[in-house]
Length: 149
Image (tube, rainbow, N blue to C red):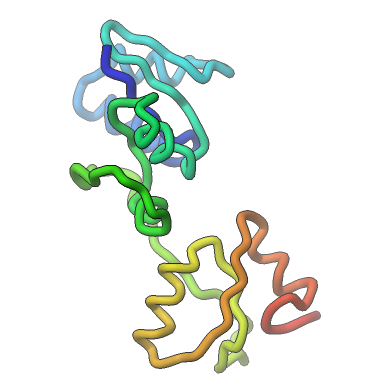
């Protein structure tokens, strides 16, 4: 049996749509009708549905044979796994959001510190990064970074 660690959320929805596109109806239906199941078996494939940031860990620990996860997560971590190929779904982009009048960034909150550090260094900017794992937009509202209402 092939065990596939699969990120829940938007990537899962994109994967299901992709399965329908390539006529893998049985797999797509099983994933779409999963309700609250975290383990879904179809023929000789078992899907393990986990948080995106946990996918590489499931592969690294040998629980899953392969994983489907965003490259952003792979780039941020220090995993001892191979990135086998880019898949034709699940595209995303990073955005730097601020008030229109903000022209300089001294402190930025992000979940993706490696990506942000690389970006700001390439721009020649010295920016302090604050690593958060959720509700990044709140950092501005409570004056952790940048501006305050």
